[in-house]
Length: 209
Image (cartoon, rainbow, N blue to C red; front, side):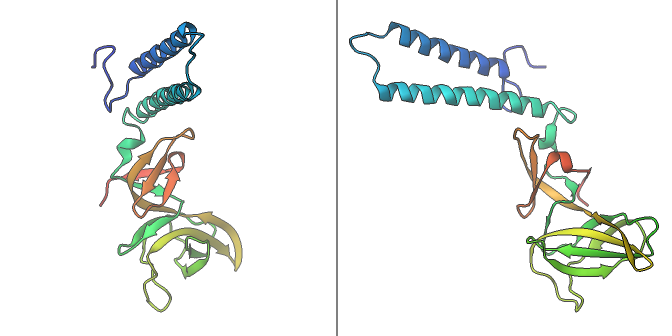
């Protein structure tokens, strides 16, 4: 355990940052109160100090937010997800390796089609996969067997019974997390290839195979 007043792991300490912020505010207020009326602070100097003041305030708020995020999810936060594979319905990158999909069609379906769409939302493949649920590998091939171009793809499942659509659902795909980003919405994870998703929309994590 770190002693009180020491910086926490990662170099962030809400207490020390807050103290720096209060010290800066006190110094600026004292400077304004005691400046020579016959030789007041230049407007450019004042603007620079105000900009510095705003920067210190923003850093203090950012550090407190980062500490709050780091305290979530078992103490590691979403930064602890880096290197793992996450299940997401956001677009994921397809290159040389298959993409693992979690398919769960409607339980009354007698026909199930997997639809893949590119980064622009255009349908690129459609294939019958049967009514079973579980994990499958998407190989990224056309009906003629040609490999699709590298890029970001998303997936939906169309469940039919007697030829009629009874459900259309988004399909979860697994992608490796390479970066965690913190913001006011709760953070985002960035996947291999540069696609990303809000951390709150990640539905499963696993170690890479």
